[in-house]
Image 1 (cartoon, one colour):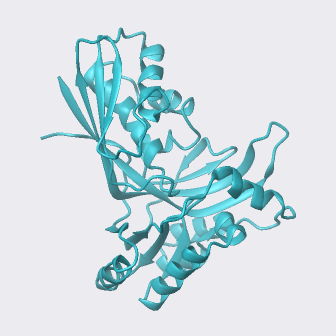
Image 2: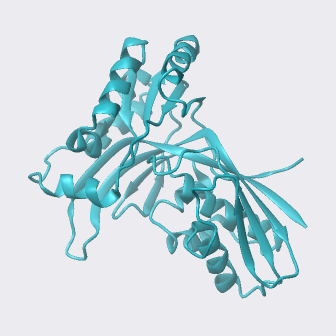
Length: 291
């Protein structure tokens, strides 16, 4: 038996890091938006009694450290289903180490695919619970759409959908460690203002301009990466309504009211940055592919 699952990426419309907690985690307020750029997860039953992982990208580990392996282990532990053997194939399209949640989405897609494959009839909240053990932003991808994440990033609240637009994603050849990103923020005084509050107002007003002017990312401000700044400048020059780094980087996204401007932007950026994509905001998360 085989099941295919679409695993969409996300962008962070707002990233407010509110401070470090006594337990070492950071309190955050994030607005997450699922996008149409996606990986494909294919789960096939085998008779090996093992979990195996394959991937079209040789830079992605296929051992027990891979998030889809951990997700499958968690699924079998949670449901008490006996693993007769599965292979999980990851067809990567979403750039890695980009702040786009590609790995997290692959993990959520694995849980969703196994639920379908084994007919375990888990509800969304059950799948989200399994996902919460795997990583802070993994539960988001079960339902996707537009959500507010608070606490340490695991408390999710569904928001109205983002106003209609086209999104350009551009990943420069720069990788940022999450620790480095948080260290840059920890060196700053505590913040007094939450940009995410303003952005949510823009969403509920159905105003793309308000959303774009409220887009903000603490990591973007304090890391101050040259390539990221160059891409944002070019996006604005090519008529983006807003541009920001996603997550802890280094992918940049530009929001365009007019699709024709977004298409021109992709063509121009691809001359320098091959990992440039045209996509749309979507109202769902991972989904079973029916053929």
